[in-house]
Length: 291
Image (cartoon, rainbow, N blue to C red; front, side, top):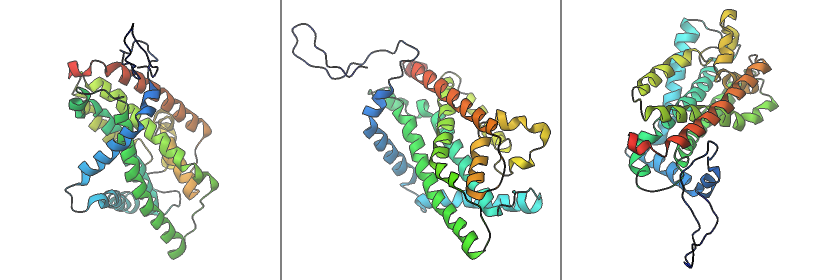
């Protein structure tokens, strides 16, 4: 689709948009996503209203779910299994891990269903299809922001009421980049899966199973320091290890992360993002016929 105005023959009609089939591998039309940025805001508002329109607690569920999960992890892994947390208070350690992992899996799961859940809209009117998964990830950022407020309250309570030292450092200013990092990784993986599940529906079952197993391969309920040496390769193979551990290093001053692990995770994220965009834009042309 081109933004240039055109005219044919003696026809005085001026067109501002030209919609054409994508023929090139790199024909992603990301500029169109920016032109339709207002639509992203509308989709985010729609998702928020639809999700919590007829609920009792509404957005409070954003806080209840990770908090209850973190408390459960405190007793199971902290008290019973005696898994270390590098000196970080249990509630801070488990709540942060749960919060970031939930954000990642929410972006992944929602983007993996973008074709099937929006087929009625995609089949009727044109708009850049990428606006839908971007809006979905934006909706989950709102949920994460609410959870960060509770994490901040717990953080301040631990420092000023319980008088426990937390070694936060200036790298904490990179928190928005960590969120962007996780969102791109989760959303891009979701785009790849959504492109595949248009033909192979049973991959959704594999995804749900994989997310459950993936949490135990990610330092959500344990720090990387607790990972046995023979399984150290997991830190490189699992791109979610780096952002979660990096968060704890920057905000809690606990843990250790090799620069090579960070670079590997970033490299995988870039590769997955590129692959997700290419597959998504190639499949959006004929997904209606397949579904």
